[in-house]
Length: 312
Image 1 (cartoon, rainbow, N blue to C red):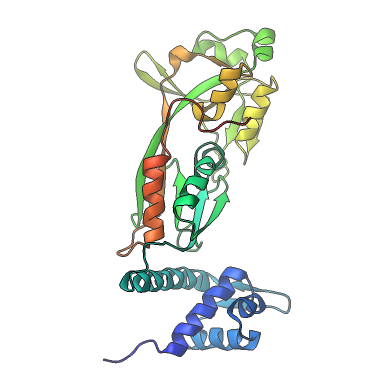
Image 2 (tube, rainbow, N blue to C red):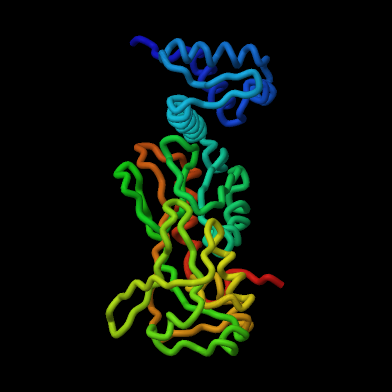
């Protein structure tokens, strides 16, 4: 059988991935205990083999090309599978290890995921968690994420989605705002109120408010003096300060409702939810650390009565 990869080539792939992850040949050399010249030769060896440029080099920095990003992601997954297979074959797979990169939106990070991560870390202390908190869409093909948590299901057929929960929505306002402007009793009252709006970072599209009226689902696009973007938690802060009404996830404002900082309105038109899903690439071999984290999400990050944690 003809060998496709000798030890030198596998070592070159490891050094290439390290340079891509750390953003430089010198940093990769320091981490691997070799010289920067050895890293440079390894990358050049791979570029000659593939016939493509993997890095764009300048006097000050290097950066991955589009082909380099795709190649690094595939190689990173392959190296992780080699390591996992070695641990399983040697009977050392009881202690999971390695890096796990997660992308999660702001609200779900602060109020669902982050309060639970210490539980996961205690169970799997060998796994290093890199959590990317942002409201933009990520691409698995050119970014080195293992999984993401999102509301919208992917159009990409190569991605798998597992449902986590349907998060209830509520309309809230501060007592001071309601004292000044009155409490809305029906959807027809909304045009007379400040309805704080949030624009999706990925599309710039305004998120409609969701209601249920007499069994009919309604999407309402309100107007307001306030439109926020990037950080949806800013809308909650503005509502607390008396800026107007806002439709939030109940899990975000449940402490505010319990303390009286915010008041729920239009409860008779509630009942709508948005789904949260964990999304990850389809693979014939899923690294055990990824599978363990997905199982953790499905079983532990679920709605339960009362706040997930105390801020005291």
